[in-house]
Image (tube, rainbow, N blue to C red):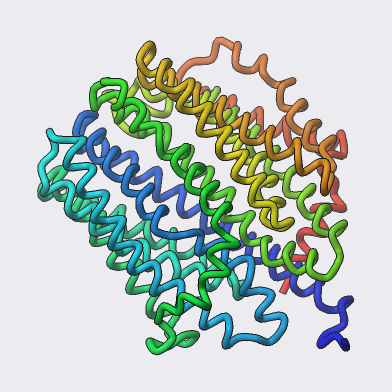
Length: 490
């Protein structure tokens, strides 16, 4: 059959689009991180450790249920819509979008009802006025996620990522306003109103691509896609439970809400970094999917190897930021009442590094259509988190759960790469070199330097030395940076 476009001309623009989208997503994640810092600096300080612990626990568990209702819609969009567009089947792409939106409205409503019931039975000390707004946010988020995920399939990953950025900043404004007005009750109401804003924005942007008539549930059409995605969805659900399960483990061990609040501060940093990593990687899913569909698996492996090296370097920098700055910066940003959260940042930063590495394996599992691999890795992570987390929570409280999160994320990454290396081996040596090079700078942590300003200067010294070492060892070369600049050029 004659190709509609020559292969040699199809990939280069798409690769450039993927890199450019990823660069925009990195910029968005920078704004997202700024919003997260502002949120952490203001809301916990106003609520205090106990009330913030209550709010954080409700938000974390609501995230489970909104994801539960999603049925892996983002993955379906990223996996199938690019191929439909490549084959000029845009009507099928709109049909898939409409079916998923209709399904998520139904599943989101069911998930919100179950959330409200379970939270009412479990957290009997919390009034319904706290639970109801968060339950409403589950429905709203279920619908808005599909709207923004459609842009990922259209290779407009930057617009997809804008949904989370809008959620972050609208939450900051509305939760802060609610907190100042009605305390923890207002914070919960503000979280629900933020989801209303995100949904309205998604509807406005999606209007040119889909009509109301497309939003219908056709079981015979959507069923094959859901069957394909069922195992991937199971793995993602376990994965999200691991990411947002720390607060629940602390509370399940009978520890007070203040400890939940401490862990939530550290977990917020983990979530911001972990979500940023996955969002950037998902920008490359359409590209890798097309490469595999065109029989160019070697090119897909090369892209994955580059991403692994860059994310490993970023993870090392995050670990040193936690090591050198955590104990000094947390009391300044969040307030002295949250000082115990500073000690949790080091194990959490190790979890971020492991998550970044494992996410590349997760991306390759999606590219290679290996749902059982994703499920096995997620099961291993969940088992480690619960198996270690509960005993450590009973013994050490929030610090024990933070250590369990790092161990679980490391096991998750090992399972992925044990299998991926057999089917589509990546170049691991450069990434291992990047991590080993960072270990050489550990003596900086032993220097008798105290005070926030002095520790910031010490961290800047590390960054300069680490960057110079990466370039000197040619783990990151001028040619690679030049190629990246060319890819980003209009």
